[in-house]
Length: 253
Ligand code: IPE
Ligand code: IPE
Ligand code: MG
Image 1 (cartoon, protein in one colour):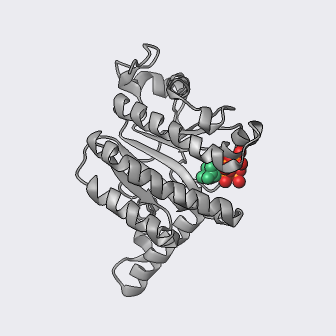
Image 2 (cartoon, rainbow, N blue to C red):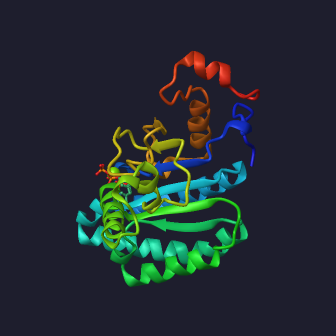
Image 3 (cartoon, helix red, strand yellow):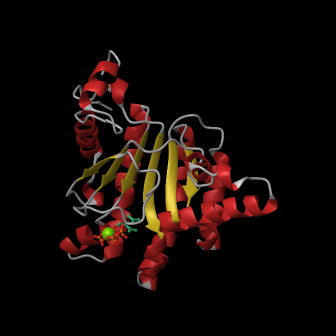
């Protein structure tokens, strides 16, 4: 895998999150059923997972199915769930060989049982891997996640194990599905939509947002490199002034 010289390997994001959008439109443009776009989207997933592994990225979170996607026609939902089971079954050995560790965030219990079983197996098989952490967001919604965190915190407060005055943003973050992961520094959305669609709203507070018109089934390694190059041109200020950032820049920046 040839990583372009335009990318500084010392300044890669630790965590990339992607809203993989545009499968349906990609298929429609070809006169095909939307589900065909989802099948082709899996090819992109494989390529981007490989590319992130080769770059040494720590975490890749892929938005694969939102809590709102349950409202799609049943035939499409069923096809997506079947695709999920078949893909995990087919790919798990390769993922394991490539030292990828799999995680799932979202309302796991609402997935069909066959999906839960297949996913749990993949999570268990890859649990000791130390390479890329591949986080699949499934039946995931940020509002649900934050409400769930509030509920867990409320239960602790009610039980007397947590004081209301000790609840701060760190405590909230510790009760999100993502408690074990760093926040994404880069969020990519394909297919020209400029919105968050209930994805990691809390965790993306300081992420750089990158939007491309490319539909997800056309998204290839080069598109990822373009996003990373663009990310590396940006100055991440975190509320400070540009001058403050310039004087604290590490040597390699
Ligand atoms: C993203 O592609 C995949 C899922 C949401 C599961 P879409 O299915 O949203 O494709 P468009 O946006 O309708 O083209
Ligand atoms: C977001 O895409 C969810 C996933 C990519 C899984 P959608 O296509 O469902 O989002 P909206 O409906 O355009 O906001
Ligand atoms: Mg869409």
